Length: 404
Ligand SMILES: Nc1ncnc2c1ncn2[C@@H]1O[C@H](COP(=O)(O)OP(=O)(O)OP(=O)(O)O)[C@@H](O)[C@H]1O
Ligand SMILES: [Mg+2]
Image (cartoon, rainbow, N blue to C red; front, top):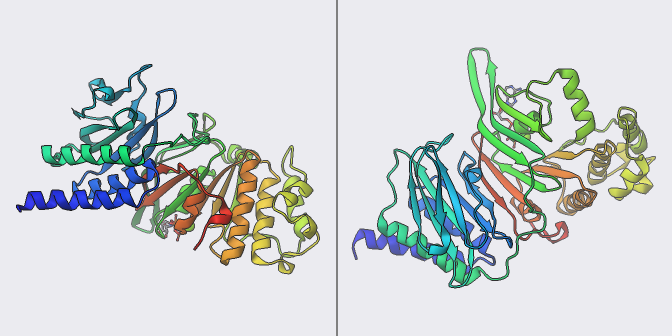
């Protein structure tokens, strides 16, 4: 067998085992996309799933630039989508059951080639997969394009049935939008770029998990979206309002009204009991949640008079969540909230987060624990100061079912 044939067989083999170990179309495509990106050196990928209204929703993207926004919408019956390049939109019709290649300059990203492949079985169009590479990169060969076509069809036939879009993923405007964020720290003459052109959106009432190796910039990004730190470049908008150049006074008001922070180290005041720790906050905000209600949401209604040292680590963390809730925040930003806790206590905290989400609050959890991704509505991964992967979790599990 020649080397080209051999490498095709290897890729097909990897695809086959990815599909057989996946339960849903979303999972299968994700696993296949990872194989294809690696084997064919394609740095960008996006999968759009068709909704019942035959609209397309991005469920997965890889790459530093969120190219998902660049490929939307189409018409009533057939799955016709548009991919944009600098010359304007190109219409692509998935119902024709063939792929389309689009070449040109894409704004923002340096994409020079994009391949759109229908994800469909005989009767159903499930969505569209787009793979793309840089302008100067080697484009996939015809044989490789055939493999990509085959992989998506195999996924659709094997895994395509009965996978409705999750209820939590209805099209909505982001509540918070951090775009093209850069953050540079200077230490004497040394300049350190911690965030480089990072995009990160948060949608209403979702639980999003942000993962990445130590030092990749997660806390720095959280501080920027919380208005605790200013980006060196880029914009942060909250509910359509641009916060990027807000004054310190405006930022304090913004944080008081909208943001609840939860840290790994609880940050409770040791000489104040649980109730007093909460009361400190309710004096600062206009319309606080009653401290008793906040304690009840986290299941500690009977611990109001305990000092932090009279509470376990997990209970202290729950008090710190209750303290964030007193503000009735729109978003809770939790930076490694379970890192200092054992398994049982971590599950308790994650269940408290679920309860908080049910009150209508949006939650961002930064963690190193992969398992927590399974309860998220959306997962975002960072590497070297960039968000490089994002996907919608089509079947989030309850916190009590997580195992590590
Ligand atoms: N105020 C600062 N001054 C200088 N360097 C900083 C500052 N804050 C963060 N850094 C540097 O920025 C990089 C990213 O830090 P950050 O705390 O955002 O990482 P992280 O992803 O949260 O890591 P971890 O998972 O360990 O918490 C690190 O190398 C850190 O040393
Ligand atoms: Mg951190």
